[in-house]
Image (cartoon, rainbow, N blue to C red; front, side, top):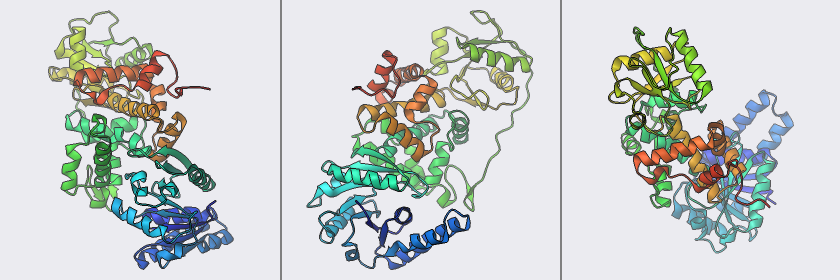
Length: 504
């Protein structure tokens, strides 16, 4: 359907799109208002292809043919014979609308106009066109040739045959086409809101440091980068703008509330790698790693008592305490000397110990969502004795696994972030924005999550996730953590989170 493609905008996205389709056999014309930008982009792409040639990933003939399929367009009118024109220009609605209006006077009636917008409404962009049915979203991720996913966005009036054509084109280029309606953030930027906004919320509450949150989320759920490392990589100005945009477009739904921390840091120019300082410092683009703080040695003088029905966790705790020379009590109630370890879901340590009637000065919480073999999380509360905290930290790390000590928080770090990710994914499925399978696959491909939102829910247990959300909502008393009906119904019916609403 699309053999001759025009790409407008020769920045990182535009040149990547040009390379992708030239490599999959399409003729591509690249236009930019600055001629030197076109030259730079084509030279950049040729250099990348030369590296593939040197590595044996391309033959000489394939290299020459691919380069020949990427040509400069000196003027917008050079795109008149294209079957598809993709714009990858500045994210300003009026600018995109004017460009598409200009293109309608140039291209044929059958030419599809596609926008690579990441945050603007496709329907609003199309509203300025005389034929809005031939406008669609085609949102790629940077770097385009390596990120094997593209969102195919159906505007309110987009003709279905164009959606099918974009799906076929994406698949031919080796990309997964995630079909989504025109909703704020589409699929990926929508589902990704929980990761960064919840991390910023924890930071604003003093739950843990930037470094602790990143370490816990890398070693626990297995994210390749912690949220603050990711902010620094993408640029906080970019991330904060998306957070604000999605929040406004969803009419201030508390789930999407941005953080004042991000706004202040953007104003200060602390944007991340590109400015040399964000949540971390950078030299020559490399993060300056700070060593984890050393932990002093203390005398272990107390036994331990664990509130948990999880036999596997009890065995793990007992084993590491034995390595430390400490004992785990087996009675239903702790002795007068015991350090009490509780395992709340979605409650803070204070609420849980009060409910259980335990002594505050010697009660701490242990995160049952943590990856026991990589990093453990111990949560203290304001009344905890400092020596009790020090002893528990040393004893629980006796086998060499690091132990993070964080401040009191409903849901620790892992529970509240994972529950937020799962819950938002369930809401996306509930709203019909994407099928369960498309949702999980798209998030893994685009955001690099080790599991999709629904996959995380099954991994940690959908009932446990629902409990975390219910308890967090009760502690905070706000709708930010209200459980999705999709999640609640599948827990009540004991169905997988991927179960559709109706099965024919």
